[in-house]
Length: 240
Image 1 (cartoon, rainbow, N blue to C red):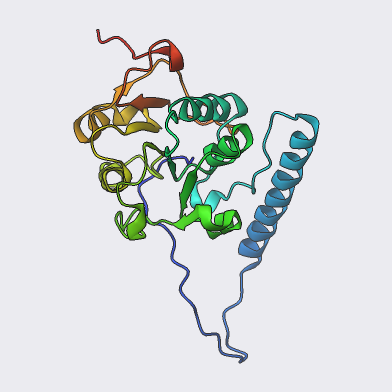
Image 2 (image 1 turned 120 degrees about the vertical axis):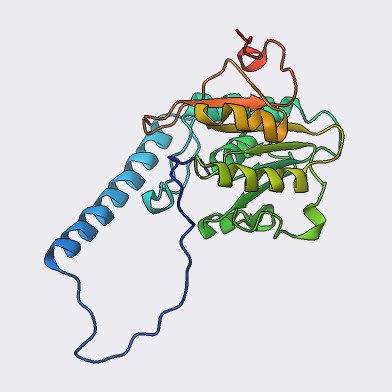
């Protein structure tokens, strides 16, 4: 997902039975204040996103970022650039695009070319709003996906949730599960620190184009591909 990367597990939505008695736990005043501040920030973020979308027809409306899932959406230039690249790779009538943990890309793909066949693989169930285009995805179970998705995609774009070796390894398993053998085009958006692992695990090279996020992040992000994009995406970066 388009997220600030930190090695931690996805939260689980386990049901908890609450007893109705006087001894049930209560939030401290400090915790309650922090919760109220978070909810207020979420509302402000949602309202700001809606206002920006209304004032800028080039932007796509998205659900608000959830900091508990370390969500940070691409800025408009990044989303449109990567979406246009994915569209340019869909040359065949049976081309399909898989968007692993990058909902901004999916949304812009559908805006640029509504008829494109695309699948969004996401942990956040809010994206279930996309209907049959949505598939629940937890990178901790990298191949726990519908069998009909196996080797079904000519273009696979991934943005691993965290900047850890384990996360990239598991997402790489998912990429291999989804990609058509032999001729699939792979794009990976992740931190500069993953450069060597991206080459080792998936045979990817860094491009000149530098992804940016709407929320300015401290991590330096890169775009990697398994094919030479020529003059697009700033081309492959030349090795020193």
